[in-house]
Length: 190
Image 1: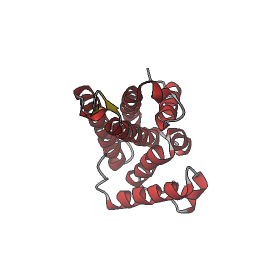
Image 2: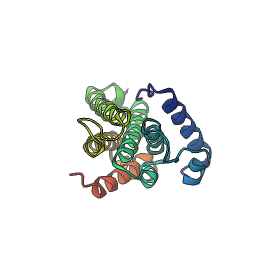
Image 3: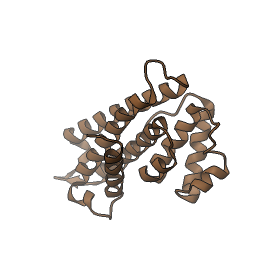
Image 4: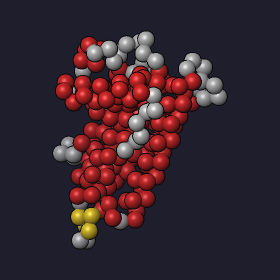
């Protein structure tokens, strides 16, 4: 859904994180064993790994391995992306009044808005990561609320498209919503 990073090292790290998470599930030792949690990684690489953690393993796991605001923002971008993908997949398969939910204007608008917010948040995260320490006019603390808002909008849209089913444990969106809600409460979101 979101574009790959332009930095080839960051893109390679994101692909590696994706494959490690697919093989071993959420496991800090598995990520550490291939060097993906190394503190010496450049920020542009580290944020892509953490975005994959948020997307592939879940927000709770990603936040448990992120140790700063920039990392947390990257995790939230990944969690929002996963929620948006889950919501859109459900909207494509759920048929109401003889047509898929995804063909209805209200759902298209909701997910277009979510995608724009997530893309903007990720662009800010990548910009701060690329600028290094200090962050110029933006710093990691300023990016965290933007990423939190984007992730919250994504899980809310995914939950809404699922309707009452979204609250049941049968669908992954209920876990995604709980994890982002817990992050929102812990990180001071309104």
